[in-house]
Amino acid sequence: MDPTFWELLVVLVLTGALFVVMPRLTRPDVFFAVTVAPAFRLTSEGRRVVTNYRLGSLASSLLALAVLGLTARSELSAPWMALALLPQVLGTTVAFVAVRRHVLPHAVQPATTREAVVARRRGTIPGGWALQVLPFILLTAAAVVLATGWPDLPARIPVHWGLDAQADRWTERTLVSVFAPMAAAGLMCGLMLAVSVGLLRGRRVQATGSAALREARFRHLTMLVLFAAEMMIALGASQAALVVVVQPALLTRGFTLLVVAGLATTIVLVVLLFRLGQGGASGQPDSEGAAPAGDRTPDSAWKWGLFYVNAQDPALLVEKRFGVGYTFNFGHPIAWLLLALLVGIPLTLALLMV
Amino acid sequence: MFVAGDFGPGDQLPTIRQLATDLGIHPNTVAEAYRLLADEGWVDLRRRRGATVLERPMPEPAPEATTAFVQRIEELVAEAVAAGVAGGALASRLRKIARRLDPGEQI
Image 1 (tube, each protein chain N blue to C red):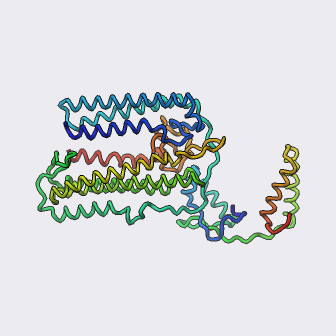
Image 2: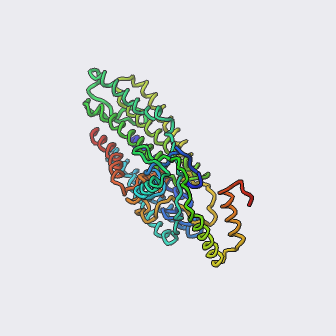
Image 3: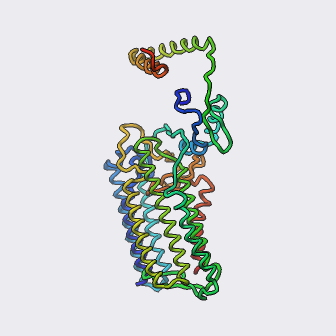
């Protein structure tokens, strides 16, 4: 069986499980992207909504697995197998939007009072700037090694590796094929760092008390996940670029170490994030009859409960209403630009390397 | 907050963008509020340095200011009593305000 099959199988199973637990991870007063009383999710109507969503999502995941099995058995090439992701994502989105309609009648008016700390913010990025530049130093060092050893590089260079760390696709040696992946990796790391800085300067939903502390911990952890992703990208791109000048055996060991360390770090960070819940709100005490604060964004600005579009809100990054983490405010043109870069860079690179 | 003394001279207020983002309002609204504070002499606004709290000398009270204040507070108390607020609750609240204004005074 093609190694891509096993990679996609793991992705589909993990994503399917994540979609199932997703409703538990939101803020207690945000339910399927609608501001509700925290007790609503425990009512029979609330439970029915969750069950219907989960059934829809599970059906989508099963359909995705069937598509994967069919493409793997057919003569289609490995990239076609990635089509299996579509039914899972689309099906779960449809299930989410469909059940959300049943939650909308239970929406409540969120608290209209706004809180803010009236002091200059003194947040620091995890590890400080000395640590944050590490991915860029790695990429630059790899680029320097390749540039100095250019005449000795082989005519064909590998561009894809299987799970067994063996190269299975090659391309001609050109400036683009050698340096473009590292430039793209540098850009991706730069964008992720920009998002981290955006989080540092972004909105605080809770201004004071233990809720604010938990939110700060959540934000810190999110920035660490972004940094871990930057390191994975930088290490992966540097290693892939250096495979032509470093002994393959040494690189294979490095590859295994990278995968294990990367997976372990990601799993630990993601588990910690999930334990904190969206915005660090998991296990937060009830506000005792007060109007729910939600995430301080108006329900009306959430399109299908998934996309936040509010030109009146100066925040560029807001908490996701479904899932854990942050999303762009698409009411600002810069959000579209960042999204285009985040999607466009890997896509362009993939097209260049084919 | 300025009158209550929550800020000292030299304290930095959040940037316009930061406060607007936290409150979810337009930055122009925060900028206008900062301008008003600067006009009243509470803060110093410098480009790229944000708003810094100033040492603000209290102005000499006009002779009619105290009379106007007493008259206003009498009216407010009368309004509250007419609206059904208990006299005891009002007195307790006023005592708290008085203690905050002059902690050493026996009330």
